[in-house]
Amino acid sequence: MVSFSSRVSLTVVQAPSSAAKVKAGNQQASEPTKKVYVGSIAAILIFVDFVNDKANCMDSVPKILRNGVIPLAVEYVDRDVIEMSAEYLGMKWPATKGSAHLVVIVSGANDAEVYLQAEQVSDICQKSNAIDILIAGRRDEQANILKMGSEIYSAIKDKSADIS
Image 1: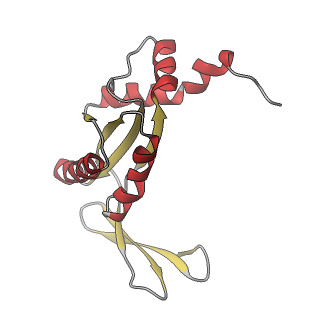
Image 2: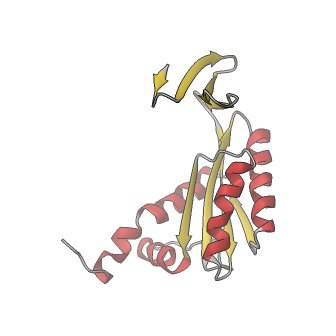
Image 3: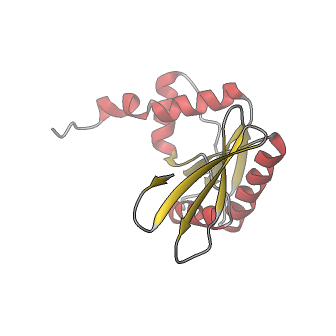
């Protein structure tokens, strides 16, 4: 048991199928349970495009979480900046329709669980006026996209001021 405060604690209990169940609870409320997978997992990366609508893009995140999907990662990406990174790396950013993008990585014990979460993310974002939703399921696609995101600073550092 790891205690984060006097009111919230985290308990990890070994479960079958190489999975561990995590209970996070507040003493004043019921204790929700979230699975944390140990070992090999399935994962996909989802891009969601929004046209000139950063607010709807960012407002989608709490809606996703309230729906019970706990992504491995969520990142807001501005098209201009990510395309500079892609150009710097000699790559092409796959999302072409929007100017505000949400990159979501969902994971689970198997492909069925992952695709169910991806469908939930897609439904929520469509209700928030997303114009396109793309899925990068192959590892090489995911690696390229993550590389573009991680090299943003390298791509823009010559075009930005260093405030030291």
